[in-house]
Image (tube, rainbow, N blue to C red; front, side, top):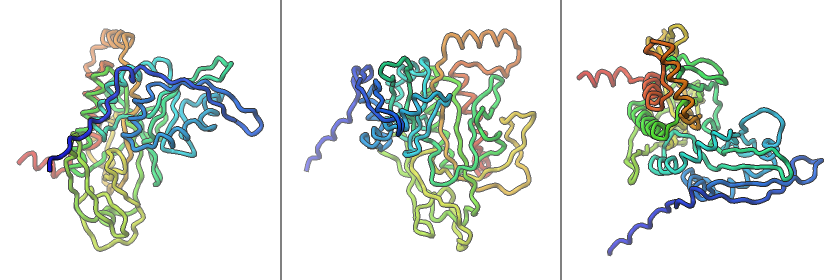
Length: 380
């Protein structure tokens, strides 16, 4: 029997990338206040609805979550917070944007959409909606984007780091992180290859659209049980048809739950297993690793070299690229030229997207280093 041709996947039109939807929203902000009315503008609704589908998010549930009183109360609040993780639905973060950040997002949206369509396991922020809200009769206009919560997890995130590149070409832990990073993370060779390959794809996109000064948000859960007591089975990969990504098959662990087979190890001793591990096909989610302490020189976190003499920690990582709405403006180009004239140091990092991308990839290769076995195999 002749097979029917596959239906063509929906492609947004040029009109979809410039469309907006306007409506009024009425909501009670507090128990003692009358219903407040808001003017709500939904930017590129069809495009973002498709991006929600990429993330397997039901549009009706999503709409109910973000249009509730928690969101509106945050948007009109006099507090200076710039982001909100919804308490009733921690899948989403509401992030207030500046006018320039919103402009960057609208400019890169067509290429961003096609990038996420091609690379479903991208580590870029998952944008699900872009809006402007204004209280009727008021003057305050709030621009905000809804982003997927990278650190959403049913296990505790003990430490978090926001890692970017300094003007001197160094890896730095940005403001808001709990502490400086002084460890390197050893991944299974195949996982490391997939992670760094996807980072390369994502950095190529950011370089193409002229974005710079992004960083890696990394959350770490420290396990109390050894991996040998957790990992059962073996690691396999299958090529996902129609994409440049791979999926990992899983096997059941000793308690019937799915385990991340990031190491080909088995053991008969399952005592003390207190670290729940559930494999996810999405890169950056529940990634298992060994965290090895490293020496630092003069505060330079890029000097990830000789491990200290202590056993490595077994950790679960959540990670993703964040802060991608910083465009490479003419002002930044002038700033870089001025810096170059003021210093002869070869370590001055250009804010040029191409150079930033190169440095970013180089440092992540040090954060996720090759194993000794991989190095030996390369030398053979």
